[in-house]
Image 1 (tube, rainbow, N blue to C red):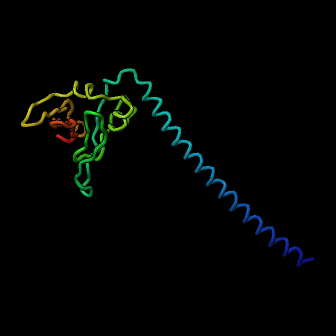
Image 2 (image 1 turned 45 degrees about the vertical axis):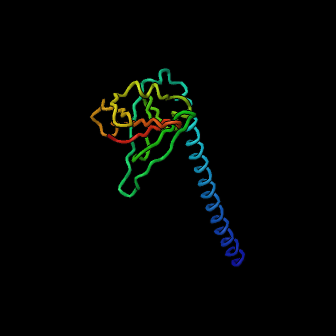
Image 3 (image 1 turned 180 degrees about the vertical axis):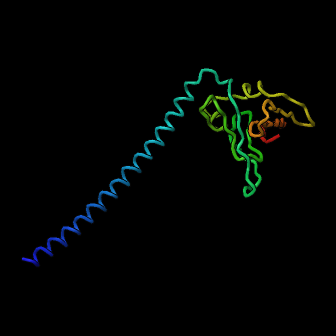
Length: 164
């Protein structure tokens, strides 16, 4: 009788351990699904909020600067039949419509931001072979940027976004 009790007690302890491990694994799976769905809903809500913006001419632009470990580069972000847009020496540019933001590339691709809207908020200076458009409406360095326009003969017009 004593042996049987020890045997059942050991079996019960092993079974308890397996149940605890199973519950722990189940909690991890539930948490992972919750995090994934939360992120997915956030992305969907972000797109919905951007689509409901009434006036796309009211925006702010903020720059994400390169760190010391990043190498200086020029990156093509958007291209149309007549224009190419590059980031030069900047990691990313974010466009804010109120509290909702998107990247400059996404704003161009989805039609939230156009070249005409962008040029309206910038002051221009004509240089030797280029036009410099600058935004200095803020004391914050993250919001000050310049856009250089290079007219290419028989080719597309290139626009480079960079820091001032």
